[in-house]
Image (tube, rainbow, N blue to C red; front, side, top):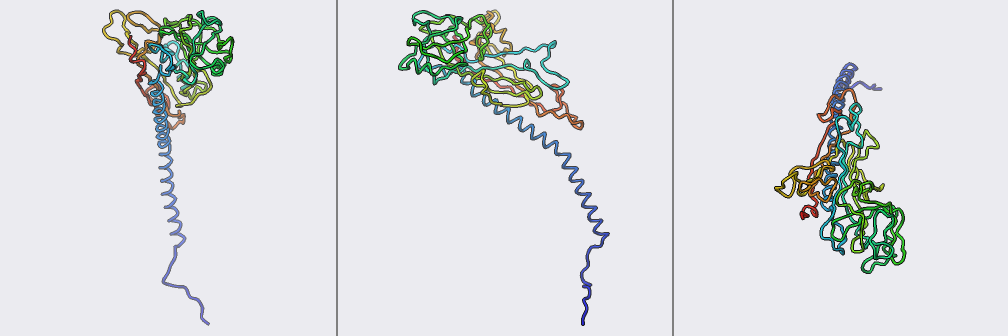
Length: 365
């Protein structure tokens, strides 16, 4: 009987060799893991910067589209010689004595940011003529009721169905020389062959806060008397503002219609949003050219032809938007980077864009 004998031509690893190989593998793996761990924050930062860049580019594209069409949408069936208003701007002018941000926590408040309203008209709602209940007398917007007369084939019932509580309407004189805005407090209703619009009375004294910012401050374009040769238009304005309800993450939002809850977040971690305007005939004494050469970032100082015309948004011919975004703050002790804008632990990206409302840039009359 034969017995099995070991194959002397083949040998395996010894225990010592196996331990040495495992030790080398562990050292190499630890080095690779350490290298990966050290580069992981860099990868995250790059991803954050890329996301910030994309969101800011998308926001600029959306604003370009909206502002380019500012002042358009006035119903084609009406005869107004020029567009009375295209955008309104609310400038928050910060001072050194009242900072708008908290430097220790890198948080920002609402007064750090401007607001931009793009005036647009709801073209699905036909225009109408304003009057009193008789249809023969002018009506004051300070009264809280406006009666409107439909035009063309539109019936009072059809027109009334287009107006709802919370809608904002724009009243425009037939020449385009004066405007007013009002927010409806009730749905439209038919009364005596006309459409009755109940609203919170507004005037030209600037005490009326409307979502589109038209009558928030007094200016020489605001009127209170409108007659049956003038126009009532339903607005669908767009508001750009920064939501600071979460102070550690201010968000740039687009709201349409202005004043509603129908908003879309365009970009997060916004730490700067300022809006300036080039004005027509903006000079202090003698005018040598039609338009100013610098952008005005304080709407309370608007002027034209050497005359102060605060908050007269009909003077606007071009808009410059400057906004600043940041990556998500990194408060880890190992993150030592501090930016040059507010010394915060995050990367900063800024954008400056000039937008020309095509319907207003030709309105030099």
